[in-house]
Image 1: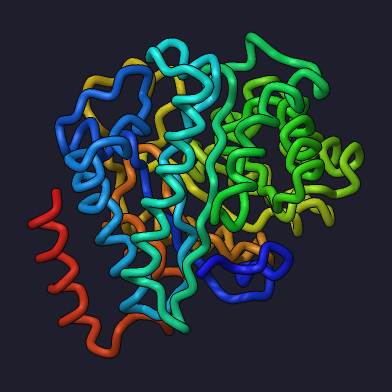
Image 2: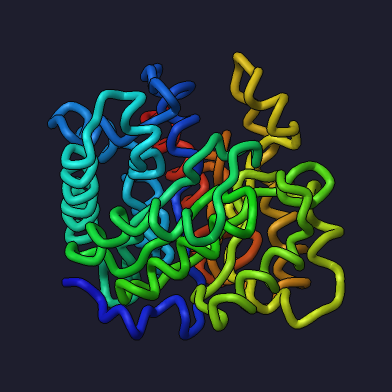
Amino acid sequence: MALHRSSLPQLSGGDFLTDGGLETSLVFHHGIDLPCFAAFPLVMSEGGRKTLRGYFKPYLETAKKRNIGFILDTVTWRTNTDWGARLGYSLQDLAEVQRMSVMFACELRDDYATERTPIIINGILGPRGDGYKADATMTAGEAEQYHAPQIEVFRDTAADMVSAMTLTYPEEAIGIVRAAQAHGMPVAISFTLETDGRLPSGHTLEEAIRRVDATTGSGPIYYMINCAHPTHFESTVMSAGAWRERIKGIRANASSLSHAELDAATELDPGDPEDLGRRYRALRDELTQMRILGGCCGTDHRHIIAICEACNPSATRSSDTFARRRDEEEIATTL
């Protein structure tokens, strides 16, 4: 059953998990070719949906076993008109992909949601451009017009909210928020950061958040950081200011490599899950509203388990040794 969009449970307290690096897991762990780094074609075939079920299963089971909520993303990060056209998808095709993605997410929610593990269906939007660069920008008005059709499709589905992930400059975020406001959809904004803690556009994170809030009436329900390693932004979020209270979630990369280095990499850098968990714990000490714990490029369910255990040890199952052994066995059969 869809949640009421005005009362999303992650806004009331308690931790929520997400999945990890969908695309990197599919490419490096499952050996699937993803042209344009787009996972959405998989949702349109039974074989593809079977692969996606296998990908999401360990994340959902982790949340269910630990009685923690889960933000379940649609696989639609690349379903805007520019990326769709590169892959041969029309506007009508992309709208059908979005609807099918929500339906698929709802099926997973029906299988795993419990009273103690609420699952939020999160309609994902990606940047019009690369996601690592800010070299082809739009005005806020252009961005609103560009992204509005995607948000309108999500509005008419069972999606509980929308999130724009891996944004590189404030104007695109402003346009997305205005489009979401116009269509009555709760929206979260997630910026990506470079190794210096700034957006690819050069804006500081504080500047970006303040600018979006000032021009949209604090429109986003919250902000997140994704596709950057904690070492890239730890010092950034230690700056004083109430703006930090607007950051509710982190979806970090496993690797500390730069975006340019990751783009050129031919092998996956999984980093150190335990170290990543400790860094999340330190970030939570600084970001008092941080409740959404997830991963991005290079992370898998091992990282999410480590993050969960570091940040929410009370949710770990009663027998730590038995739990970890079971998790390791599940990982071995999944990867």
